[in-house]
Image (cartoon, each protein chain N blue to C red):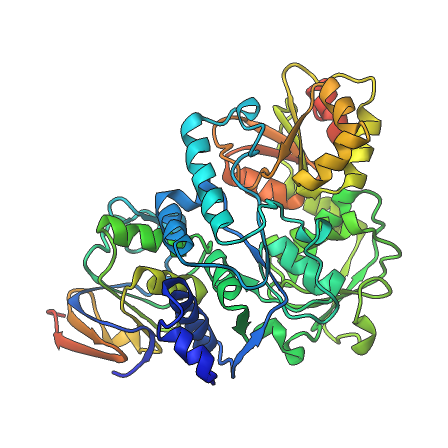
Length: 130
Length: 398
């Protein structure tokens, strides 16, 4: 799949996928990388070292700094794939230098798939058992 | 997006790390929102100042940028997490103060004015009508777009900083006249008697006209303080950061009254009050100044507080810019307020100071202040300046 580069770069890891929006400020614990937003379908899951796949970001612009903090403390996702990237995630990915691509049909990717981001290209290398 | 040769070289790193990072941010946002090019901005307002919100990561990022980053245009700063001089008296810890000062020092090294206010337009960062600017701080963005008629999107801290380092912003959103057309008519059939009524009105419109640009009719008068309170409220509760008021704000005459219409009656304001207010009578904190008090508001507070004493069970804060406080010092207002037992909280405010766990209840004139106080787990009461001062003196909300 071809998308739009938000932050250029390459990453290859297991995907963690949600159809819900994510707020990094308040919604993710930057010390552990675990999603803590109450009622979120990924609550309790760690984004650390995953290709994080979600439709778009939400919430405070401070979320950009949260991503930066996660990158510095080694709890950040290794790559981000969005349906449509907004300001908070875009700025967060750029300042943290996390490869980020959007305008991708994220329904094609499922949690557990081995996914690679190569600039604007998203490739599913290994499909997890459905 | 089209980039000039010079802009391309900035993007490629020929002007250093901060300019490169800034260009990456501006270009990515430009691509996301289909901007055709970058445009010059006249000034920048930067949010993301409170260490409470930034944390060590934000501080680290700012220190990285401060190594070679210098702003190219007039740039002012949002409130910090504490009064930069009087922080001890306001219960701020040494650790917090140390980190907060590091944040401020980083911004100072970038050449940013350490104004620490959400009302930059009152202290020297006043754009002209039609000027393109890149401001963060939603209340100031809304005031600048609506009351001044300048043009800005609602920037976040890093994108505003990026605009300051480059002196430009991507040309999209509210910079384009075609996106500034009002699309909902709000007929105000209720009387607005005190400043908190404007906050309640902002709540009504924000929740009923989410993401729309309102065109208001039926408001006979509104002063700058009321408009700054309204600007803060309407955007906090959901509208776009732009509105027009017939006969009051600039540019309304260029547009036809939108067809889609909502009516705000007295009862709607009462409902807004009941939703903003909690059931509480003992008030532990009274805070006026969200957005920051103007010198006019400070003088009103001083007049109402003269020969009165704040309840020993209640703290009373006046949140303002340091510039407004300096005038207040000169004119003796500060003395009156402090003699009554009140405190000035300059450079900071109830939305960004670390208040969680310190107070169970707060009374304020501000609908926005109530929204953020609830996030700090406080019970809230909103009313006019007089009601707030009564609460501070008696310790009770009547």
